Length: 450
Image (cartoon, rainbow, N blue to C red; front, side, top):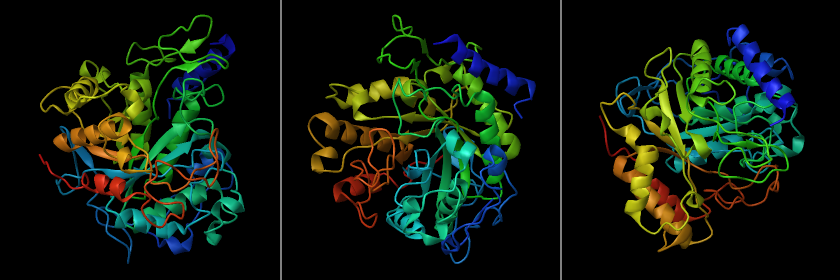
């Protein structure tokens, strides 16, 4: 890694340290098209611009919309509980696009924003993980009419105004929202060479990452439907441009920075960064859950075994793992998968331990082109069936990747093309695959409680 690059990011960290590392909506009728106090493309200051109207605490999801669960949420042992003390289980979907090059969730050029939210609820899901990029918050541009053409009231709006309107529409349907800092520079994710594997980049150092989280936490503090902050998507090695992927850093002559859990180095210690990020968010909104992903594309949460994340507000930490078929080459035995996942992150669900906490599987997904995508004797279908068994046995919280019927604009992606992992069809009107949908609906109900 070049000394100039490292200097830039460490400079950002020192700036954040020196500064003390110090942005609402609620159940609004989505037909209103959202409101804005962003102050134009004002970056983080715009993101935190004056609060939007809140609808109060638990149950306030707008009228005549659908009620939110009793809020806020909190953790107790391995469980996430609502304000009444009942278990809340995330049975969620990812709705991607705002983190990519057009700065808006995909599908707004095809379907009405409120109709998409209503379909998510009607299919039985209760939450949405919404990715965003630091570039989106920083630039906050007026979005192109093309990308919101099915939603005329969103034309001429900034990226954050559209984000507001999406959250309003979800809240109106009684759906809660996880804000996910997916990437720094806006694009499709993820690889070792996309320069987005850490929580900072040369352009967006840690100080900016913290500033943007502070701004968004403040912006949505009066929106009870926003219940969680996923601090950073899939921490992983970052290789210099032109290097090929490697399994261990340093990679020969290539420069490489690999995040680790602990150690105190501000350039690599994800545990330390997550602690700073979580406390920054909680300073603005102490009611949010703080989602901390594991290392190596969120596949490895071994770190909390000896070094859990401890924040200034108790009952806030939720760890997050991701899983896909390509994480398990040659998998042919369920017990093998169960043992592997248990060692990497399932152990965190063991009650009564210093590390005990809820685990949210923030991403998992499969193709929708046929029944073998969902269940098969080998390959992707076998993994997906086995992984669903693992989720079911422990009744684990989850968010499927993705609800999208179509793609957003990004590297290797085609705007408006079919999303082959999507729950919805390309019109965003109906399930793309009944077998896939049914397999997920079988996981939605709460089957275990404290």
